Length: 191
Image (tube, rainbow, N blue to C red; front, side, top):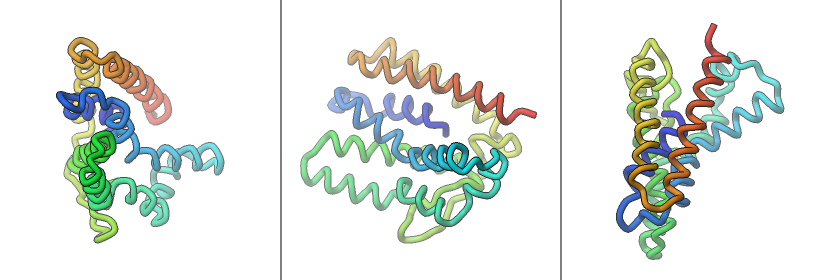
């Protein structure tokens, strides 16, 4: 899934009842698993000047980068963090780790060759889904349409039905970033 979709999904699922005021840790937890990919891309494109095709066909799959990504997408490491937060009776930290876990669980069925090792450090096994969130050869166009409906519909739902103003801002910003990201992808990657 694309990062704005994680923000909206996590807000809709976790930003209810007792956790409603915890918009910041839930939002950060939705973002953190993708943060290594953002840093990777900024390094590859901005610092190293790596061409777009090389980034996604070669650099992304280098073992050192994969290990970096996997640390932030590791369900066992997230579970340890959540257990410590629960034991410490720290609801904001627990919401953060729950949001990270939801991000990873949402990614699991829609990553194919770009799958993460969600059970790192115990195993480097990666579930390669038959569905890809981006690859048209593996239902990517269907998923992209469903994801767009989730982001835009979810942003409207957050705007209309979420009392804390912060959730409305999260929804609006997610939709705006999603639309900009879509335009950039169409510009860069469409022949």
